[in-house]
Length: 109
View: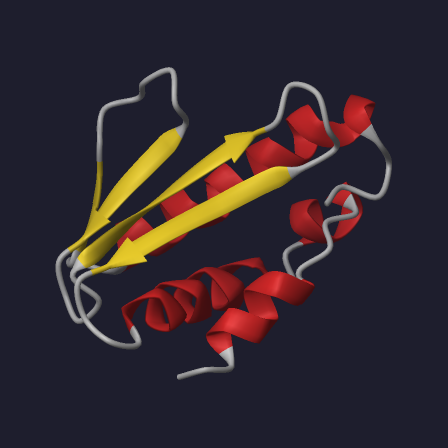
């Protein structure tokens, strides 16, 4: 969820997308896919063997990070990497994002 409401969603989405790009540029196993209408998507080849996509809702003040993995604990690994990139980031902090669900999943590692 985005604390500031629907009007703050674009800035929040940009902050999360920047965090994803930061992780992908630092991790050889994370490969950004072509931009499409579904959101910003990244394939993770190791150790999670999965993917994630960042997308903003058009009707609710939400920016979602959806993950999937073919290995047990893979989604937690993906969330842990994203959380590390987002915590303490000024743009993420000012976007008013609630990171509770991301923290909960990342804690499963």
